[in-house]
Length: 332
Image 1 (cartoon, rainbow, N blue to C red):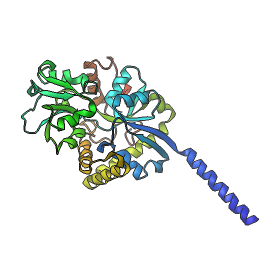
Image 2: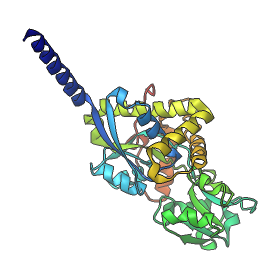
Image 3: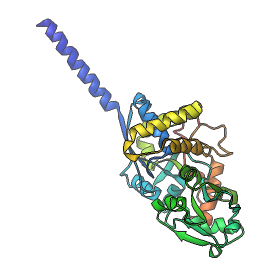
Image 4: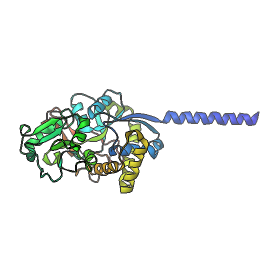
């Protein structure tokens, strides 16, 4: 009976250890603001390579249907972390939602107007009399007037046609319109084969509008900061590995996304291009040389100025109201 007792005790100890490890795991629900694309490479890479698991973190990663929805779900406590547009987060915060960015991703303004390649359309003024597709209820909506004004023209001289966000890129790719407003690195892979295009960047006309980043409720910083720091570290480690690996890593990341999301019927070449193009927007001049994900107070000053000019945030707010670098490895 003694040997059996030793085995039983060992089994009990092992079960207790497993239970202890399970309790130590920190779980987060993470919601994107859109459907699968190359911009999801970091999450899929980290999950596939076990980067979250090795830090004692598990995540439930969800698709989204718009940044505004994702920000609202985070702000009301229905989702732990939003992978979403931080400019949209700033607007929501200005209206009282207790949200804050804990890490940047697309920090250089990626909004722009696609125009057919070789069309000769190079400035906002060149768009006068042209049919331009956009989505009035999407993020670009409030900034169209500023973009045209800064470009020497006005909305009433442009034939702006609002279409549903999901139909916008397919419509333009099929030949509708003389231009289309969307995120340049997001849209480019969808157009390269069907309607090759040049683009006019919002950033070249005074608009500083960061896009994707990590957003949480403010109270999460108080109650779950150590666990959030683990999630943040794993996420940015994934992107660091992808960037360091270059083209071969872009291809591997695309294969991982396709493997993990077979239902989405994704195009491998488009995913690789999406990854490559989005990386170009990860840093601004002010964040060059800073750790991946670290945000710049100077960049946020410019963003606040753009948002105040569009009357989307109240006057008098400051960068620290909208972001923190406290959870970014080696950023402080």
